[in-house]
Image (cartoon, rainbow, N blue to C red; front, top):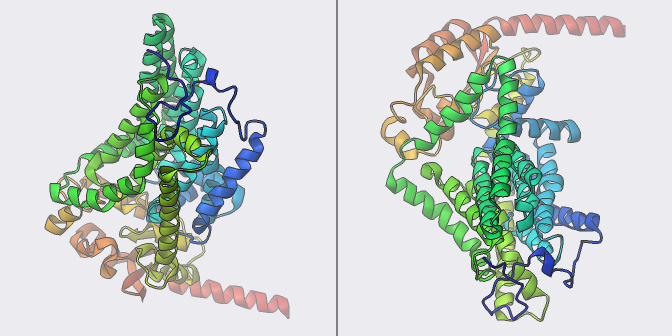
Length: 555
């Protein structure tokens, strides 16, 4: 196998423009002499493309679930035993850390993502090219294109964007063919992929790409022992972070909960049957627009390579594994495509750098024009969707903030706990009240037939038959008893996220518990707020006593 050399011909010429490190000495190297200046440039561009995330508090419902999980974690509770969701644990640590640094709430998380995580991913793409011209081009391409799509998904702090930080730097460690056979580099790269998997499990596919790249390097150099050592180091490094995580949860008696909710439950979620019609519709609604918007990256990325090289093999497998992970469950959520931005930006970077350093021809001008149009179009559309009074996204419905305000102003608020019946972790977020049950993200609880993303199953039969788990009802009722839940918010009458199909009356154990212990405290836009009986009178007496004490002290 022969490493392709850099072709310095006109961009229209087909050639492999991915330069090996040995051929770069004479090229322009913006940012290499001053890495900090380059990083500051990426931070500025990240803020310029992601400013809306600093204006809108809740971009996506999933963010509120992660925030609530981080709050439960900061209250000393154990993930998956005291708080249940299907995401790996590092997302909650990330949200908690961001709030420790920048203050409580999602603004802190968005700020952390915009000024730290995303710029460092772009900086990693630049480092892949040793901070030369192609690196600058790739970093900018990532920053622009990763913000030029449906803002509801690409601007939110989803697990996909978080996993890219360690995953990108994993491929930086093995960016050149000689690096691939260095055991410590392979082990460190594997460890970074293992960390990335603790944000989102499909990151393991990046480990497969690194393994293929190591094998390619070994075949080229005919170094069997070095190849075997590097592959072993990669595997050991990859399993290290998950193994340490499992041991930590095992020491707290919740390793079984970790595996059930983040592995077994996720497998059930992925294989939940979705009709071919709905899968095709979601592919047309989300997958096809993604391909159209990122089309220039695919096109110029392919033109950057004409030979099977070490780097082209690495990038090709990264793209394939990222596509396969996006197809799981056939739900085609736009944030599933986020991992593709890194390999696409790397693939396109050499062509972009070559095309823009000379008077641009028609192809280069078209590329720049389409890129600017996509970014401007989606930025304007996203701003309008969130800031205009039409409230296209359900997260912008004022009912959530109003319910939260009602709960915060209730006299029973001090020391209260909350359970929300419905898919609405956003209510926990606005109420800022401890969860009375581990099932704060009810869509993943398997208490009902609700299956996220499977709309036809809900319409035809209230979800799949095997979705409900009777043992989970035992856990729920035990939680409510142990925490002596103060409030139950019933979203079913309001039909929020189709929860009107699952009224409390359908579930006799919960209905009996509510009838015996709760009374209606109020209704906010059809959302019923139930309060524990006697709590209001006791709280009122305590409030009057505090007022009288304060008045005596003032006198």
